[in-house]
Length: 293
Image 1 (cartoon, rainbow, N blue to C red):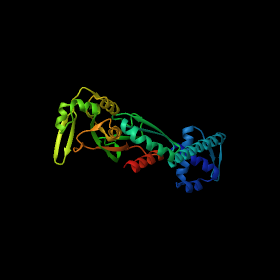
Image 2 (image 1 turned 180 degrees about the horizontal axis):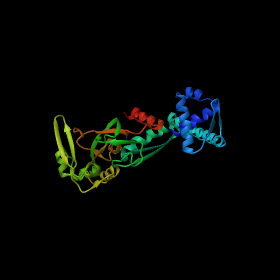
Image 3 (image 1 turned 90 degrees about the horizontal axis):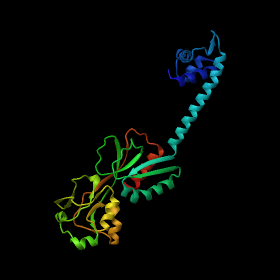
């Protein structure tokens, strides 16, 4: 039998003085109420109640045990209240992971808005361009770019990321402006390691498709590093517009092949299936979907 239930039954039997009254309160039979008290006595190896046909009274040990049961049940009640409060009000620390560029440029301003709305929530944002295991690394929620292939994740779609191909004016002055995606085969293409060693850039224009193998002397696992390399004239880079748009607008980088399109990369906010969403997690996911969905 459940020890806490047996304790609760024992306390109410003493307080009410009647097995039958406690049976009605707990929705049990009188026999089951007696069994709960007897189970405690068996576990403790001593009698808690002296019973007669008309009444029962506490033994000396039963009197001491009664007070300890009340202390235990009170502690459990307080613990339940704490959990209920935590589930009702967004509070505590929310651990979030995202790709470096997306997190730094898209998420940080929104996190500020979220924290202003829910001041009792503290957000820990970890930026990493590798695929992070939410469970093993202790994250409650993540932002994922690209295809999702983990069936244990609950995902909600966000606005897809538009990809741009860019290079610096100095690089283009030296190597020439590509007129067709196939021309990029003669250029230094800066590789993004998470996309794989044999990655290719796929351009489309109407019904036409062109595939360009990424070949070059510099690769990195970090989009910001690739942007810096492009600014330094080291080659052509394909990355998300959230990372490159400001440099294109300022003229530091030039968008290539503007009449061609690169595939958009899907973006999702994800959490594990087996996690029971706390108020902070639920409100954060809803807020991000509201702003970026």
